Length: 208
Ligand SMILES: Nc1ncnc2c1ncn2[C@@H]1O[C@H](COP(=O)(O)OP(=O)(O)OP(=O)(O)O)[C@@H](O)[C@H]1O
Ligand SMILES: O=P(O)(O)OC[C@H]1O[C@H](OP(=O)(O)OP(=O)(O)O)[C@H](O)[C@@H]1O
Image (cartoon, rainbow, N blue to C red; front, side, top):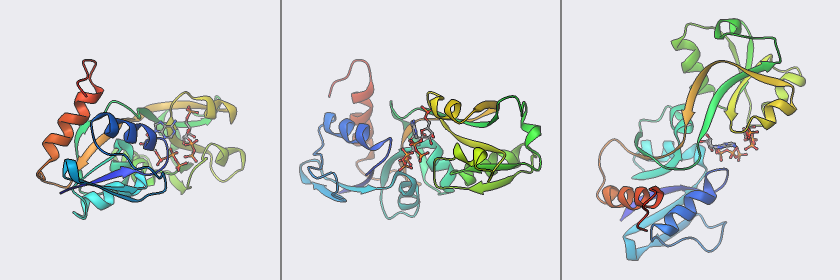
């Protein structure tokens, strides 16, 4: 059976579950279930935190998973992106107090709060900028007002949360992210069927 990791909570979970249902797989009845065997489709689903999915798949404990590209890169896991899926898109950006920063170079020696230290650290290193990363679990927009950081790096969708905190975007796009199908380095039996069925669902001429 193909062992598939699916987000159990957060921004990606509802659409991922819906997409699997539309693709003909069995969905969990109880939103708290962590496991479901879909024997008709020869698939087992493991409902996990999206942030942990790349770790499970990269270690080989699970064959494939649905997560965010940003979460995959942040994890440092050896799992690989197989294909983008048509939901969960976001942009990963730097932001600071309105008018204070204009360029990536302005972050030299600055405290930058983020929940994605792996992703942001790699980006800064690639660009030769030395900032002090402050790792937070979420709601990082408050870090500047509360004085634990000077700038932030976070997921931006509409920009509403940033504006409400008196922050504005600056510098280059760190990453354009979307939900992705990932696998351990290889092609487990059944991946092609899952991929075809998921991508069929998200195409304009959907056949699910
Ligand atoms: N508006 C959004 N806010 C947060 N994440 C989003 C948004 N839109 C898309 N995403 C994507 O969802 C994934 C983050 O999901 P995750 O469940 O880890 O965080 P979350 O939705 O903020 O939930 P939590 O509050 O539990 O951290 C990332 O891949 C991110 O790019
Ligand atoms: O640009 P916007 O449309 O305002 O969306 C972006 C915000 O949404 C997410 O937060 P979420 O509510 O998921 O909480 P979190 O920060 O605790 O993860 C993200 O971390 C930003 O804070």
